[in-house]
Length: 156
Image (cartoon, rainbow, N blue to C red):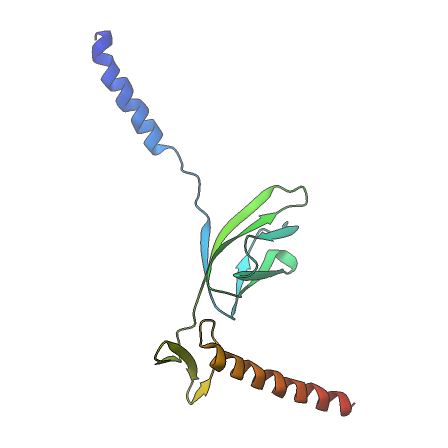
């Protein structure tokens, strides 16, 4: 076989070897619903966790490598698990989306209201609702929780 005839075979062999090389694993994606938590299992020797954007997701590391991930805002961020020496043990992409089950969205012109209908419809707070609607619900929740806290403190 001549030199010029062996070049295509060599090129094909290199291309095939490159195609069969193991690819770097893409970060696993974890989907979380806004204001809900999900358990993420990490390697047991995790010492610390870095969250790219804490406004999108938050995490609490538990013993045994369990991470409780809570959706805080819409969007995508990442979580990096490190060992005690700072070596990366795992990396995950986190996507936070709006709740869907039992939710009804009402539009009044450009203003949006979200209602939780499970089974009876009640006002709910979801990011993106009209400010007057959202603030009204938040104020009612705060007032109610304040009264409950005061009553439990006086009962002691």
